Length: 145
Image (cartoon, rainbow, N blue to C red; front, side, top):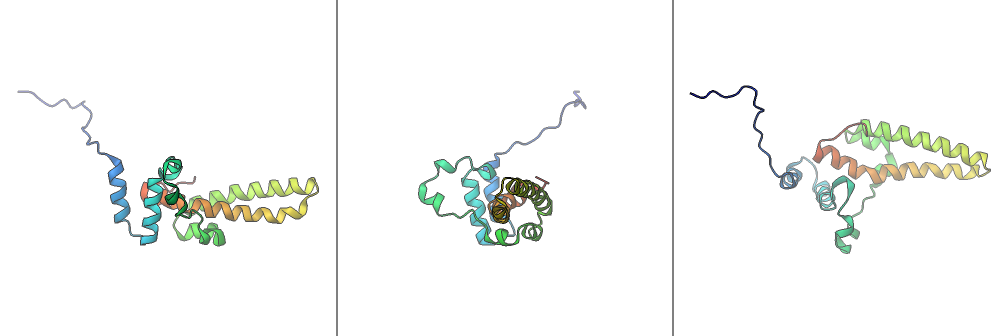
């Protein structure tokens, strides 16, 4: 009579995650527009967009990564989407960079350009919003960074 070894590690079932991500996108409780964006991001290689250069030109240009609502509302948009940690951390980092850059511009005599730096912060939120929402909904990563 052989007895099971209590010190053996438990068996795990390893599955291919590439197929399960697409199925998860279809099952998510989001609009068809977000599903289309997430499918495009998956084709592009996920948040790192490593496959972007290999995608056909028409497919690359057919998708807009700029989120106008995130541009207009910034951290408030992140809070509304449930990504308040990323919204706060991104806002703090951008505010620190803006303050340092404005001080530098005033010191070298270009203080009038300091006002335009704020648009850069809005652009950061607009470019990062779709990727961060993909990380939250598909990958389950909703951390501080």
